[in-house]
Image (tube, rainbow, N blue to C red; front, top):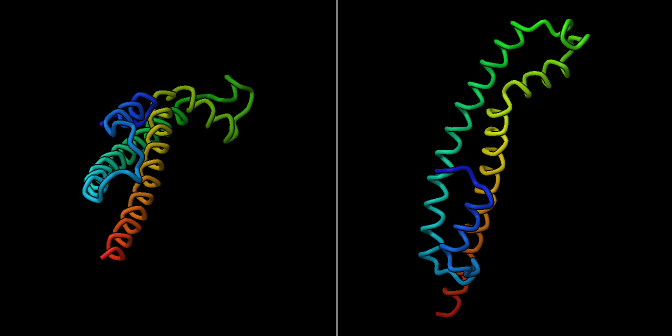
Length: 126
């Protein structure tokens, strides 16, 4: 699945026909919950391997670069900035995955609570 971005959110809203979450049935909420758990698992795996790759490449760059001659300094901040610039695509992918994972976790928590509330309301109506 793709990383969560504005286009994904637009598609998500269209798929829900711009219905509010509170208008969804418990079955629809459970389906979304299940889908989000699966998506979260995939993104967490992607995140793990992307971070490992970034760290390995970062270590290689740091060991092969003469920071003193390039920047006149060799401290952690200089090294981190250089690596971030060199690996900007990977860095951006990691940040996007972090934001996406965070959003999915918040959405799952919301769905969990909303499902509980809806179930409680249904039980009290009986």
